Image 1 (cartoon, rainbow, N blue to C red):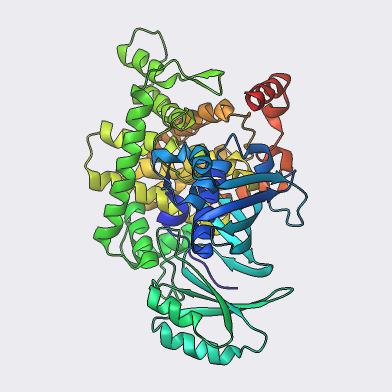
Image 2: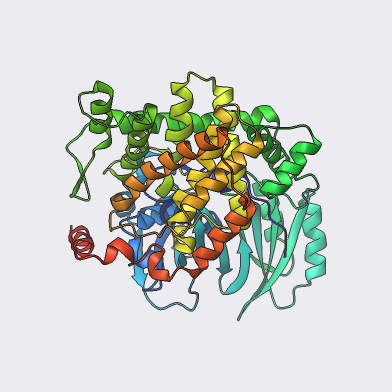
Length: 530
């Protein structure tokens, strides 16, 4: 099995998106975008099916999976206002997109089968999964098992019965002079070769492949993840917190932010300047989402039930007319966390950064960006704090999951809270060891938290973002004052993953917890009928 190294910009921060969920909106979007490229033209019909017991079945409308798939298939940009109108745009274009619940052999919670027909009559079937945080896997194409993640440009060659693989592979190496990886897949009625490469193939190269003897069909898709992967990683500095601290000791680096920068430079092959510029753009989008969240006062109700409350609460706190416990800037920050998530839940949301998921989208902007601005720190300092948070995200990506459907809300708000705590320590000038200790304690505080979003997702997710921010900042302060625990971060992350596996499926984003209360059921019925 190939060793995969996560990227801070692929798996931890991002995508920058409009929509309600990274796994349910962004993942389907990337699947749809990949399918559109593979089909090689405009979509005429799409039948998207998933198991009645899957996570899609419960949430595909409320969490915008239908809009995500549709926008990707139509070529709509994921951070554009048109994401909201994707279904209407499809109807206007005469594109027929059908969503069907039917039994599936693949029981992954976010598995979907796409049966597509192009305007030219070409047909294609894909088996797909959204695996959390916007990450995806295409696991089958036209009944041939495959595995692509959208982190390479990928070419599929459908072979005739008399095709000679060794000859085609030799010719492929001549058409693509850059390094590529070739794999074979055999299905029920066909055989394919698929080639993954960092090179972007032009029309002349694709035409050359179409003319090869023994090749009956060619399909091609460019990468949908921001950072391309590589075939060999000879200089990745670490994958775990323990390895990061050892690397820092050997290279005289005592900053979690600098460790995060070093990791992403090695992973992406980008310069220090480029990775920092990418992070600054992420900070810009987060800052805009903060502004929307605390300044937008409206009578709109999420799902027709929940009023938008963050901006009003923020104003009351700033005006100091309400008698409440004096927690300083933490009161502001809790409102910011709610406000950013509220900005996702409105009828026409703006762009946010899934960090690491949309369910936890308010935590990093509130705990790191808003606090950094409050402290009047520069962009470079805030960027370093975000890289500190990103380094903790890398440890989670390698050892556990961000998927609420896989491990509950501890994987979403819990991971984001741990990341934020490390970021706060970095903002305050703390060491890498302190940053990782803060992340450890913060994650331990939240172990076992279930995922039980009630229908529209507002309850209890918004308050959990505020709770996670409070957890992150309070714990960072405790650690900076000398508090510590014995169980290290890597073992805590492994425990979170193990606990997630022990949770029943009903407590991981389906029909458990608060969803099962009489009021929770009434809310679900109301929203479905509405």
